[in-house]
Length: 117
Length: 118
Image (cartoon, rainbow over all chains, first blue to last red; front, side):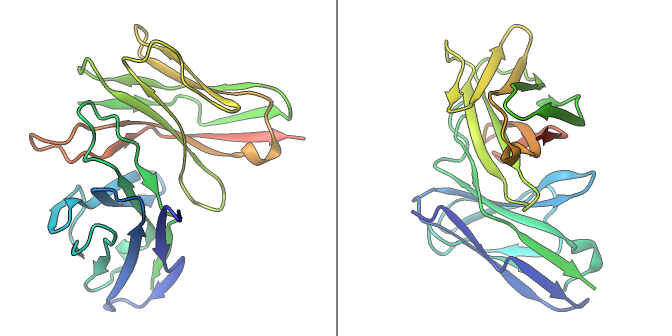
């Protein structure tokens, strides 16, 4: 059971380039999400999905696209990288969308450290 | 709106001693969950322990325990017998209940950096 995996671990892009951050989980979790972590800003939700074929925006969705064609995979696409997107990106998953009382545990991947020059 | 407050930006503890990391929360919900995560210098976010508001007993996971005081709205993490590998940032979090415009996201505190001294 690998849990949540992310690739790559590190990436350097030039402004304007596009790329896809990969995320996969093998726990049959319905809910998957992407966060970015910036100093002084904490973790902010970018996009999330409550099941295959269903995605929605979080707090900071601009400049990012997602899709969820399978339960296992939830890739994050940067359309045209900007220096403001320099950050650490985490993918997370949980069994349900939150549980009735917000009790479902979210498990995180190891993160991708992205630098945009 | 839910809010998590961690008032200790940094803490030191001697190896093999116990340490308590503070967390207070604010919510109008009657039932909710509280989580602690560890983020070492390598960067990953590791789930440590969970406490449900309706749980009568404090949660424990190995050397981690959660001192849950519902009336005070506090959920402090206790690490017993500290080890050098416990040096990390620790985050307390609540989860937003999905629906009615809510995303189901985790709401994090500001974090506490723990350094274990040999």
